[in-house]
Image (cartoon, rainbow, N blue to C red; front, side, top):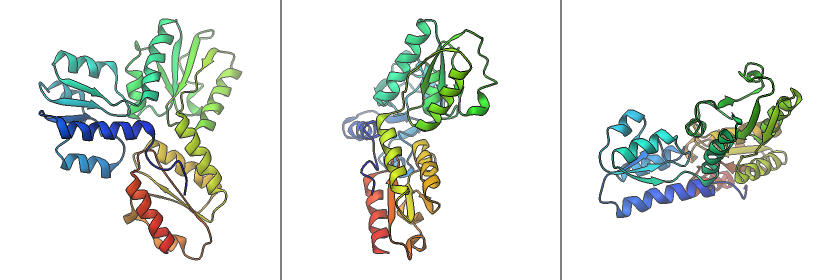
Length: 278
């Protein structure tokens, strides 16, 4: 069992803030987007009366209530809309993500163009881009390097989505450095993400079967699965104990288990118990 499996600091903090608001709020409670990428947690919160707002239009229509900004963060526009409408904001953005928002503003003010290495469709990356003056770029893999609209000699600052694969980040940065650009690199991958990836890789290299527990929409869980698969061909990605197939651990000596940063402890323990029994 990976010691780093389960809720990271930012996710734990965000989830706790929602439950705190449920306990004391006299107004309707909303989250802008799912508070974390875990269906079980989101479903429990919805059962307790928390409403998920998925679009800027839904957000703009609010005139009362409490809106909690999810752990992935949001762009400046979201805060401006809520302030204008007089809606109470509880900011549960992960501090590591919040740091990137500040970097974007500072580096652009200093005349550098920011390049985010990450998934352009991920809410964290969308939120980061929302703190730019509009000149920000996103690149996800090496295929996007040659097509980036960057001028020769343009000053660049590289940051990373907090859950991005560290080795891929390094690889992309090195390729840019070889092109001779004027760049500074700020490794904004969360330390918990790096530790989790390193531990998962080590465990996967030592076992017969590797189980990764996480929501299918969880970026960091997907990254763990990719990393483990390279070390252990019998790697399985499951969301809950209901997805666990006992046949996968039959006749093997060692089973490794890790979990994404948005996977509740209870689910991890259930899978662990079932794997041991089998």
